[in-house]
Amino acid sequence: MYRILIFSVLFLFWVVLSGHFDGFHLALGVVCAGIVTWLSSDLFFQDRSRNLSQRWREISLGVGYFAWLLNQIVKANIVILKLALSPNGVDDVAPRVVRFRTKLRSDFARYLLAQSITLTPGTVTIKIAGDEFFVHAINQEAADGLDRSMEGWIAHIFEPGTETDNLPS
Image (tube, rainbow, N blue to C red; front, side, top):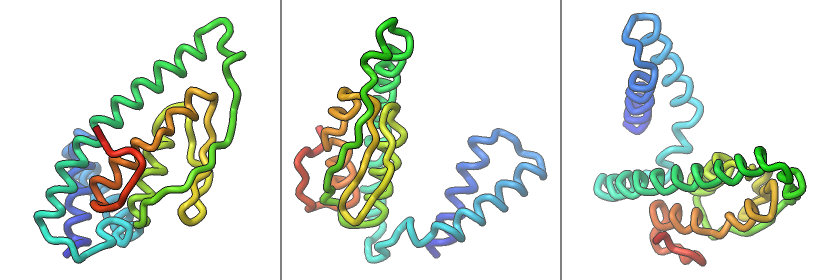
């Protein structure tokens, strides 16, 4: 049942984003959605004990999180743009590796945190070892942006009851 749901969502996502409704593109969407479903269906919905109302809660809060994340990505893009266009921008580039521990328990929540960090310009998750994250930041401002609010959002959505330093606002 879960694999059918995942396949359906992925295929629908493919159709919406591709904008092409001819046989070739629809067949390609079926193949791609099938491969991704086969490879990652255990990652999505790892905890199958949750009921439909809990899943809807995750989805509705997830939409808010992605809106918040998009805002963070725009802000980080502006910072990187200033670095790139500023005459002294190169002086502000001071790469560093930031190490922190997460309180997130599920693999999916950790995966989502890692991808959210990597999507934000100026930071890249380079390694996850258990509950420890290693993140490359382009400068101190990008490193300071790892203020745990992402972790708070993700914990609030997917792991209610997990105490984190910063809860979403």
